[in-house]
Image 1 (cartoon, rainbow, N blue to C red):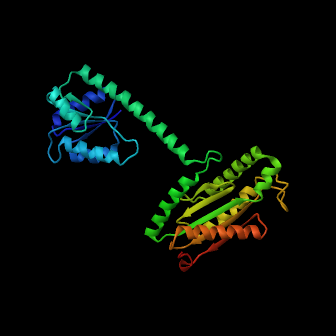
Image 2: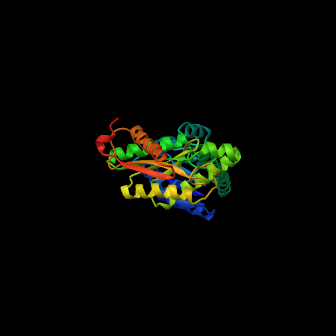
Image 3: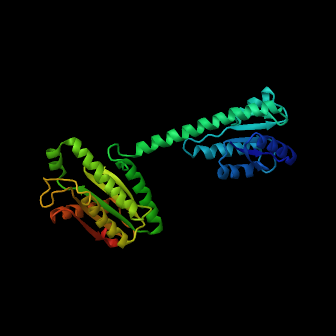
Length: 317
């Protein structure tokens, strides 16, 4: 367990640190509340042992700052036990009201200290399990249940954030819109179960092409139905055009039979892409331009990528 010990009395801190280390814990020292707040952010302890009376910033103020920081984080809560010269009922009530979780005397007998640390270690283990469970739930909430790609809601959130960042930095931005060719005919001919499998295979191909591009900021999502999107913040024009072709080729190379897809006989996709070297105007306009080129790709025979590079003035509405 990682423990942050906060005490301005060096002799007390050193003795307590030695005792805690003998129990097998990792300990970091802070000589006052201000240092404790900074160390808390960097060290991410499982437990804080906090003195009350200290120079620069006392324990109550430090605890208040820590709780405010935790309030800005997801599922964050760390036990804080106040150190005191007297563990009276009155002091315990004051400690709890100040945002602490318990109180312990600085000269507590070793069995008492050891027992409290065992209890806190159990709490730390439960916190870790809860954090993992919450992370898994959040991941599931952000993923499309069928394909495993990001879902539309989370794609919109990430895209809006990336666009806002690009606006601040005058960065580039690109969008790829991908649609499975003649997918309704595929469903009608092979059945919806095979249709679902087709969606999963296509999604995997798009995801792998995106990852293999080496573009760390790019991400793929299921846009809706048989339509997918790849978002490329801060991308170079050449990389944008290469990924567009790679996505179409990746799906084609899966060689999934599709007898109703005229001229090809396998599952193919049409792709429309729009790239702007310096963001301007609205994100919606960029999506509309990509969508227009998607339909142009279909009109020109399907199984192809059709992209464009926009001038700043061309995306103002």
